[in-house]
Length: 451
Image 1 (cartoon, rainbow, N blue to C red):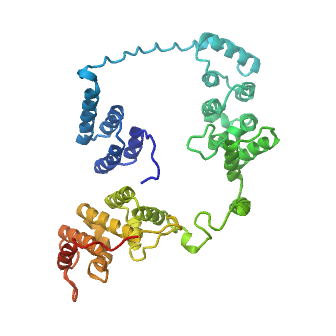
Image 2: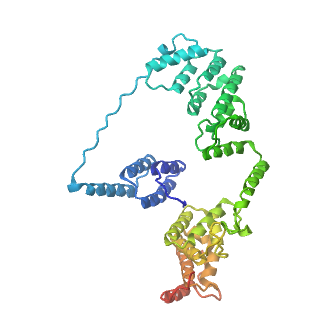
Image 3: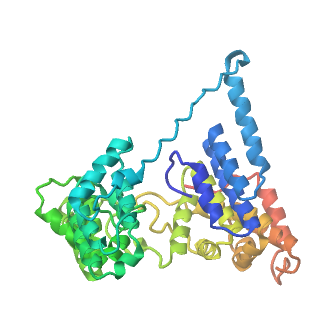
């Protein structure tokens, strides 16, 4: 469950999910789960066709995908007035551009000399409409004679028009054996240090797709990651550019690579203190209290997030959260489920709920049990781990009719799947079936008031 909606590109996402799985059964299960969510967004025919391509590539034949394609095709056909069929647009593929004659481009020029390298680049531009400097330079590296490696690396510094994407491609093309030559490493160190300083505001270490990966730059130059970030920060400090919000975030990103844990904590505390004068006790969740502390594990925090959604005053959010619980059960996320069920005994809001608003704890308990009752039909062995808690709700002192009803449904579904897993008739207790009968008799009564 995610807290926002967007125009997702479904096929690449599904491909990443399926590529991470090995067993066909796991792939089929994950695909069905993902497609259940995709249907809620009403994707286009093109999106469904792309999804089918991914499923077929992973050896899956899903009838649901074919049905959605047929349904969307029929809908588009019905949308055409009088059933007229539009003529498909004819797209003429562009002729592939001829590759330059590299023997003519380089000729007998001394590529390790920056003047000759520039002359060869001018010749390349005359023969090709691509004007791709990184393509030219990667080819030039292949034509360098032994002993000239350090010189051509130094000559690269004359190509000031390159951006970080170009440098990424060129540096990635440097042969690994060059690094064994004593003269090459200092040349690379000088080149990369200059590149980092020149493009200091474009450096984004640790992001999803770095323009110039720090690990690559570090491997070739001998600089460590913190040293490269320090070079960029030093260049930023010497520049006269007024930093906007985006660039300030990049400065913080660079700083994070150079600071120790204690330094980071000190900097964060200093930044937060600057906000003290603007903050009021009633802002946000109010004064700090232990109840706002996050849990110790990722699974427990995910459970807290889902728990807050189960208590939402909006039925649609509770419905989504219940399906999250069902799918957590289906995928065997035991630790998260343990944390969720544990909240039945202490139904407080936790840090993921707005502390200034009323927390609908009965909503959270009821919808969690609804989800578990459904999950018990599909994966009773997972729900069966929580039989003691469920029995206490169904047969104990819990007076809420619906909570007892759904807890009883969980127990019955588990018992039906595996006879002997639970005892439906514990001593001195009303049986689950009797409790269920009582609940059915009380279904007509008004549920206790929920704030």
